[in-house]
Image (tube, rainbow over all chains, first blue to last red; front, side, top):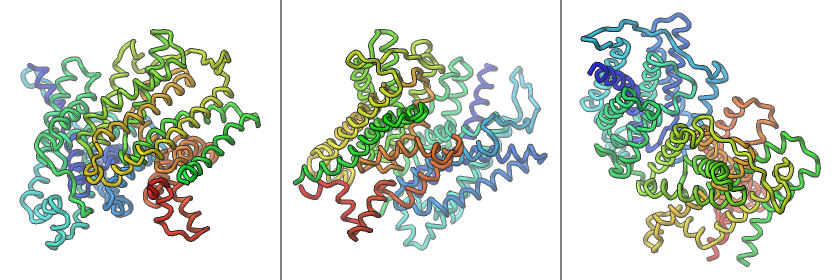
Amino acid sequence: MDIFIQQILNGLSIASVITLIAIGVTLIFGLTGIINFAHGEFLMIGGIVTWLAVSAGLGFPIAVVLAILAVGLMGYILERGLFRFTLERPTNGFIVSLGLIVVLQHVVVLFWNPNQKSIPRPLTTVWEVGGVRIASVRVMVILITIAVVALSFRMITASRYGRALRASVEDRDTAALMGIPVRRYITGVFVLGSALAGLGGALLIALFPITPFTGGTMVMKGFAVALIGGLGNIYGAVAAGLILGIVEGFSAGYGFSQWTDAYSFVLMILVLIVRPHGLFGGTSGPRMAS
Amino acid sequence: MKTGNALRSLLPVLVILALIAAVPLFSPSNRFLSLAISAGTNVIALYGLSVLFGQTGILSMGHAALVGVGAYAAAILARDFGVGFWTALPVAALASAVFAMIVGIPSLRVGGHHFVIMTFAFGQLLAIVLTNGGDYTGAATGLDIAGPVTLFGADMSDLTRYYLMVVAFVTAAAVASWAIIHSSYGRTLRAIRENEKLAASLGINVGRHKIGAFVVSGVFAGISGVLLAYFLGHISPSQFSSFPSIYLALMVMIGGARLIEGPLAGGILVAFLPEVLNLDPVQSRIVYGVCLIAVIMLLPDGLIGGIVRALRVAFSGKPKQEAERDAAPSEARQ
């Protein structure tokens, strides 16, 4: 039982990071139809920025804020400079993101070598509750994620900006006709998604060491979660993130750790075959004016 | 008239390949030959990818996995059954084709945007399975393959001879891909690429042809895998995971997927650019990435497509549409 709770906790803390990616992936896809594979690299860069800031002697909270700002800015620049021009042909956007993966990874390798990077744990306390050892840093990651996800939900469901955003996801052209500045929302979603990835990266490096190639596996899990939940469906992404995190936590705890990475892929393939629009239903991307 | 035109599109490739085959006359360095051989094995796989992406319009992010199936099939056949190169070739091609079908049937059913991600996931899964396969697949260290390759009694392991053999295979791949492009089958695939619904309404079984194209790309990949395995003498899972697949997609797009010269140009460029510019691997990857983005944003038909169009406009002032039609000559004349 002790191991059980501990594994759930471990699983949930990883699931938090994955969910943060998945929300960005799902929002960007829902609005633009662009499959942004480079999202994992955004996460990795968030981690690197955190590592640089902490190495420079800044505190972890400041480093997190810097990571969010830096990656958010990067998302803004890339959307304005590249993805803006691929809105009519989302496949090109996808290919551009492949190019970005290669560029971003190796730019990081070029400047800061390909080795593992880690920071001292921002919280070192380990609570012992009835024989269960709970690392406070994991609890912190989970709580921050819950707070951020709840905030995003609130923004998307309750504010008028959120309503406009959902309308744009539903039908871009009609939303534009209703006077919603869809282009600006697309930029906004890119920035928001990137900022979440930056946060995810900062949280990830608080848990594990990262390398410039961490993004590849993480983005696949983010995509798996986004697809399982149904692309464009934020609720689905959060629910699927929980499922995946718990499955991974269990498998790591009960002796199948070398297969951990395979679960997300198998789960995703199965879900797509049985329910192509995900477990919770999603959009199949924006309706093109083709 | 029609065949004459079609043949003319093959001619430049054959001339280039003949020139490439003549390179050993100038006693090139071993480094050059090794680079050329690995470029050649890539080009064979790229011709398969060009049938899939260029003609049918489906992008696979798991092409390296298909190459890997071929390579592992060759290695396992040689180890467990003492099977040599020439027997392994068709068996491995078949294995890759079957794997492509297994991946293709569920992946293409979900269709559209998801297909790319499905192939990527299958590619990653294969790498994980190979890594966890224990002694059978040699786990993370991979497998050795040490068999002499002989042709009519002559040992082909010598670098120059292997080079010539790879050039021959590249030529065969180019001709095969050309034959597909100019057959009615190729026309069917292009019809699917241009408008899936219209193709279906004309009685084309879209699903089956898409899977068929994926299987065809698997055959190319399997052969490329065997050549690669025998050339390197050692294979490991990381060579066939998703990132090599990304590089294959990148090569075919830099070269241009629709034209017969594209895969050849892409494979050679990506292999030799770092040598020419004297870049280390990290820098050259950055250059590839930037090239890919630039090509996609500025020259959607790939480098060769862009050059061809520029030449046409420069020499005859033909409009853009004409150049595109000539890229697939038989289409307009049917």
